[in-house]
Structures are given as C-alpha cells and as structure tokens.
Image 1 (cartoon, rainbow, N blue to C red):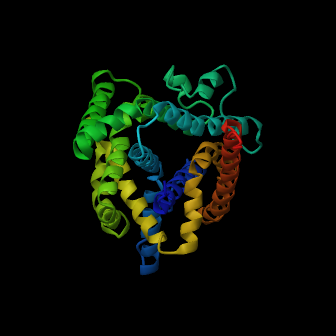
Image 2: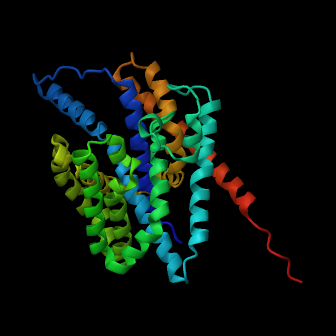
Length: 367
C-alpha cells in the first residue's frame, strides 16, 4: 500500500503538538500570564499574540482525537486494500497488528525503567503486569494512568483492534454514511450512560471503554472510504484550505460543549474533528515544501514511538525549568522535541527491525 505523505505529516504535527502540550503543562502548571497591556499598538499586539498562543497551546490534548481519527483511517485503508486482493486472513491481520502494537510498547516500559532524566511519579509495583498486558482499564482508577499517563491510549487501541473485523464488516455493509451515524449513536449513548445515568469515572469516557471514542474512530474509517471513492475531492477539501477554514469556524462552538455535562457527551468528537481539520490543513501547506514535508513525514511515520516515550522526559525537564521565562522555555522546547523525536524514531525503527527478523521465515530454496 502506498503511504499518503500528508497523513504522515499530520501524524507528525499531532504528536509534536501533544508532546509540546505535556511539556508546557508541566512547565507552566502554576504560571500566570502577564497583565494585559493595551496602552499602545505594540503592547496591544503583544498581548493579543500572548493570549492566542496560550489558548492554542491549551488545545494540545485535542490532538489525541486526531490520532484516533487517523488510526481509523489508516486501518480501514490498509484493510480495504487487502480485501481487494482477496479474502482477508483475520488471523494474520490480528497477528500483524499486535506485533506492531506490543513490542514497542514493552520497549517503552524498559526505557522508562532504565533511562535517566525521566519523571518517576509512582512506584513500580505489581500494577506493571497489567500495564505490560495493556489491560490498564482493569481497576481503572489505579491502573489507567499508571507510570506513564500517555499509555492509556494503548489499552483503547487493543479494544478497537479486537472489534475491528466487526466494524470493517459493518462499514462495508452499510456504507460510510450509515456506518458513521450508527457508530456515533452507539458512542454517544455509551457516554450518556457512563456520565449521566451511572456517574462513572471520566477515565472510561476518555478511552477506558473504547466505544466511547468510537465516533472519532468511525469518522476516520468513513473518511478512508470516501477518500477511496473520490480521492481528488476529499484531498482538495482537506488539503487546500476549505477544511482548515471550516475547522476554524466550528472550533469555538466545539469548545462550548465543555460547559455542561450533557454537552460533554459530544465534546471529544467535536474537538477531535475540528483539530483534525486544522492539523491536516496545515499538513497540506507543509506538503508544498519538499524538505519540511519529508521531515514531518518521518516524524509522523514513527509517531507511535515518540508518543510512548515522550511524557516522562518532558515532565522531568519541565519541572526543572519552571523558573525560566517563557521565551527561554520556547527556545528549550524546540531542541527538546527534536531530540525526543530522534530517540523515539531510533527505538521504534530498531524494535520493528528486530521484530521483523524474529518473525520472518526463510523461504525454501528452489532447486
């Protein structure tokens, strides 16, 4: 399957946004913006830029929703390509997915345990067994955010992988529009039950129960189907500015969904979709420039590794630079993200190479 460079660029932008958000949230946890100054044009411009920067930076966690959407897209796209060449061997499909998921996840645990310069905020105890299995939703309050909070995403992916054959069948059977509608109804109903009827922990809605994030995942699957049917039209909308503008228009309305418990049922889908439109729109701009496109594309290609390892590092560093001014934090942030990207890339590429060697079978020689 030919990779879509702009999807890799989008993943690269999304993971850098997430890592930047975690870094800033640690560094600026107790920070207060300077008082607004409207005394002259220059001061007013600086105040506006500062407020916009702070507001946009605070949206970094929405990029996780972008990953969910793009994960649904790429899984659906690759599986449709496999279906076109014959019957899908679901046994080999699941084997490939879990070999892609678990080894790097285990390496991330090893890196966390052995590396210097990482924040260790919790003791290593018997909970690590469930963490290694990816079953962090068991005793969710104790395990979901254990050791590295970013790892909750893996437990959600495991659930989506397990039900993907059913989702794939339903999407092909009913078409992208009806599939997306039914998936949204199921996801929103699950969120309604957990949030309002049963008053359960928000961790279930966050991803502990994957059906609560099914609307975003199904949106990605439906987009993959629409892209296959009308590639030029979908890419024109997403990459040529229309989607970027639509996301900007809708984002303020999506943010209003945080203002009530009933409205919160829909907030992850709305903010994730808007953030996706923005990130993919920016990816369309980057795609016009060859070298930046290659750079962000490589970051996106190995975004899984960076996602798994970044948070303990940025927390460790963020706690140690809280006294520096904001401009210095921004200067520190750029090389930090570059080094972490290279480190995550090295770990993931090495892990994938090793797994491929260990799982490959030598073909019999022809006489």
